[in-house]
Image 1 (cartoon, rainbow, N blue to C red):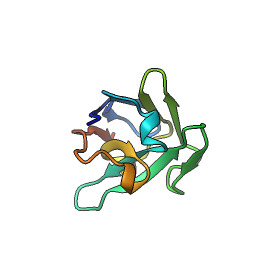
Image 2: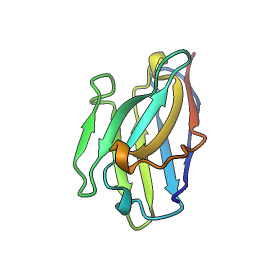
Image 3: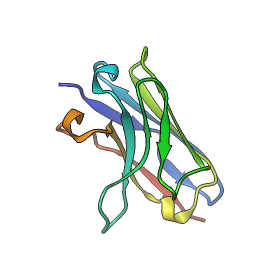
Image 4: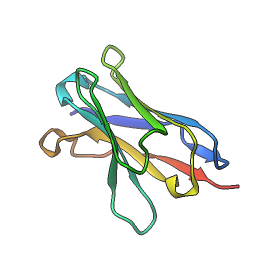
Length: 117
């Protein structure tokens, strides 16, 4: 089974930037569309960005214009460039397949993003 490892999180001031990476132990092409999700304390996990195998992207309204998702199928890695970060972006960020039937059953540990002055 493919394993997913997220990295790149940290503490950043409002308005700052971070780039998250999601490295897969196997082919992400086989997973189809990939997505970044986030879960804030006391809230449900939500999808924030997705990208198809061909590079088509979609974003939640809360991050549109600030976040950019990309993927490198050769490196089996998905990225999330986050700019103009806001305190409400604070959450643990995870990656996985966008379609439930393709998702890796065991989610990665995620990477913590904290936006605070």
